[in-house]
Amino acid sequence: FDIDLVYTWVDGSEHDWTQQRRQHSSQDYHADAIDEARFLNRDELKYSLRSVSYYASFFRHVFIVTNGQIPRWLNTNSDRVSIVTHNEIFREPNGSLPTFNSHSIESNLHKIPGLCEHFVYLNDDMLFCDFISKRDLFGSQGNPHIFLNKEHNFDFFAPDLSITPFQNAGRNTTQLIFKEFGKVPSRKVKHAPYANLKSVLDEIETRHYASLLETERSKFRSHSDV
Image (cartoon, rainbow, N blue to C red; front, top):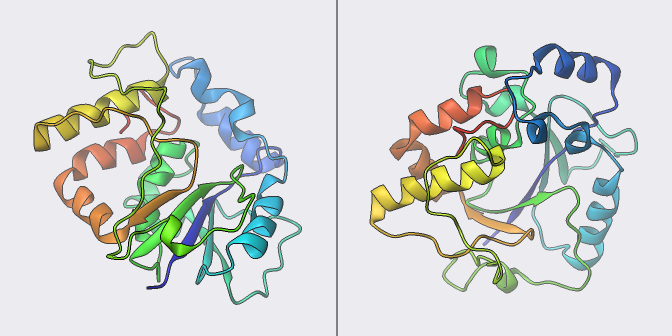
């Protein structure tokens, strides 16, 4: 089966984007959510794409999700790489955009037009450093491989405003899973490629649309995110 690759990317130094971010940021958001370092571009995406070309050339297509920005060095004539804007995939683009919340963007990746059932999501600072095969990412029956962190457990607690929105998003998601299945995830996932099934994300949206929409509407990472 075919496998697509999805990135999210932003250039936090662009003047218009910076003005928008400052316009929407406020003291109501956690300091970690509005930290400028979160949006810093070091052109890591360029080297990540090179690693894909060298070590993982089996991907059918590469989608780069942005707010409309295009990396200045990107060859936009390639038939294997596409820029996808937030406006194309958001549920309520008129009410939710612009966004500066990675949770918000990630909750909509399965809505990319033309996306394969099997896809891998990479942050732009993830690189392949050795040859990899489809079997490293998906089993023979198509089930995604999840790379679990052996050192960090999920916290099965109620949200706590003293911790970061990212930590609370994990707690909120754990609560949803427990209500749905009566089970608690034991391990966080590594900062590594995230293998996904589009159909599973479609089902999650059907079951938990309200939670995903609330996350989408959060301009920055918020304590209510999933």
